[in-house]
Amino acid sequence: MTTTLPQTGAAPVVKRFPWGGLIVLAVAVFLSVTAEMIPTGLLPEMSSSLGVSESQTGLLISVFAFAVVLTSVPLTFLFRRIPRHLLLMLVLVAIAISSTVGGLAPNFEVLVGARVVGGMAHGVFWGVVGAYSAHLVPRDQIGRAVAITTGGGTLAFVLGVPLATAVGHAWGWRVPFFGIGALALLGAVFILLLLPRVDHRKHLAPSTDTRALRVARRHAPLDPTIPVVALICILVAVIMIGNYAFYTYIAPFMIGQMGVPEGQVGLLLLVYGGAGAIGVFAAGAVFGRRPTTGLVVALAATGVSVLLLAVFAANPVVAIGAFFVWGVAFGVVPTLLPTRLMHAASPEIRDTSSAFYSSAFNAGIGIGALVGSLFLDSLGLTSLPWIYLIALVLAGGLLAATPALTRRARRV
Image (cartoon, rainbow, N blue to C red; front, side, top):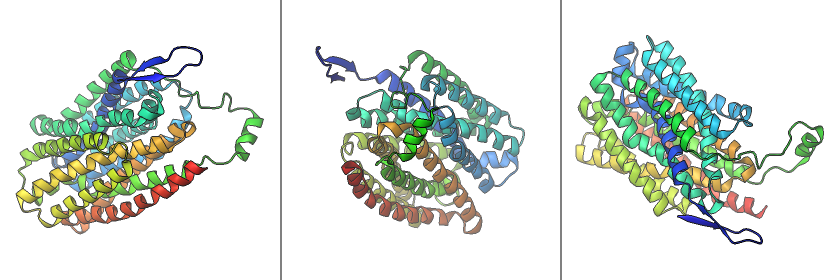
């Protein structure tokens, strides 16, 4: 597909849709998300090998996520003048190093340290990648570009996590960590060779050092899109808290409540990931122009499927069907929310908005895994889907407030 850009006093310039660059970004997203979520399918094996409980092993997700939350915004600000192309390469190298060290970790404490480093790199990555895809295309194609890029995250659930789970079951949980380390280095090479450069600083002031500029900024009105961005960030945090309070411990839930043999957990995760791919397609093809409607439908379908899992976990037909529907419905959410964010945020605050969105997203993951750990220890596996349902109700209320804030920002 091509886009025609008007040019004063000359024939229109045709700019090709940057498929190659967006696919490279999608591959980078795939690697980063897979690196984050590897422990979810391997909790029993890692717990046994490291000599810690499954609830404690699940906190590896929290540690990674909290590292993102605490460092993504300050690190994104610190590196704001570094070319985005170079920064993405450095981030993937850092992910490769942290994954390799995690695979070599002799004990739980060293693995925690490796996850912290990986989380810091992941935070910088998500502070850059969403805005990078938006910089590659005109505004009317941002939704499509972001959907392609974030599709790499869905592919991580479709292929990355299930494959890591299968490999971990066959050759030990450390091997997937080494594999991600090698693939992340290869991803950095792809970025070097194939990803177009962008000038992310064109919307920034030419200087941030003069006193006059600082005074002008102090007296300038706030960007009118900030309230919408803040609400979207809160919304995604609430959704992720509920989702990862349950999904982090999905392998023990499958084995203990659904009666799934340990060797088939990876297969069911593959089913979930494939369902998520359907959700991503639906997000772009059906709800691309109506993201709020798409989110309402997705949250409602997720709620019904999780409720069925809570009540009929022992019924394999109902439980597996509900698990599939959950995958489809939730595949819509991580695609439409960042699309909504990039449309809502003004160009001047896209990078910052993306960083705050990443922080909110990962805060939800970290808090969710922690909440799930606490309820797993106190009330057992059966309590986890009910936590998710409570979060979905809260998310629905927040989503209902977004249209009014959006209209207000547009008027201003």
